[in-house]
Length: 86
Image 1 (cartoon, rainbow, N blue to C red):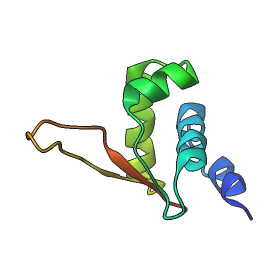
Image 2: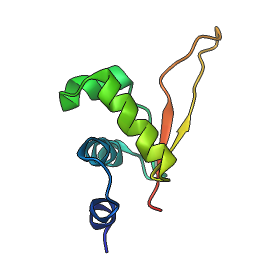
Image 3: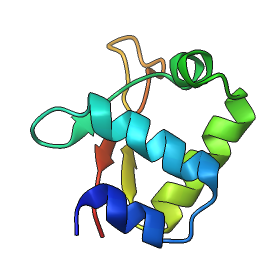
Image 4: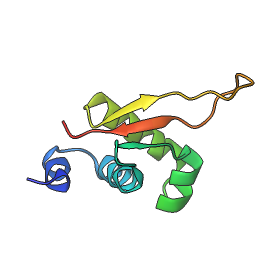
């Protein structure tokens, strides 16, 4: 069973499946990607709050690990996401 079959069988809301597929497509060989929420919102035509809800659902259910990133001056940058297949 491929990873798309697995996520479809996971009984997640469609927003979470959409965001997962977006992140999976953009992940590097190690499974990492770091798009900003505003970028995902614009490219998926979903609101920022919908993207954030989907990210929380994916993280809660083990499909995604989120790592905060920081700039040298201490301000926050976009998160780095590790796309998982539970």
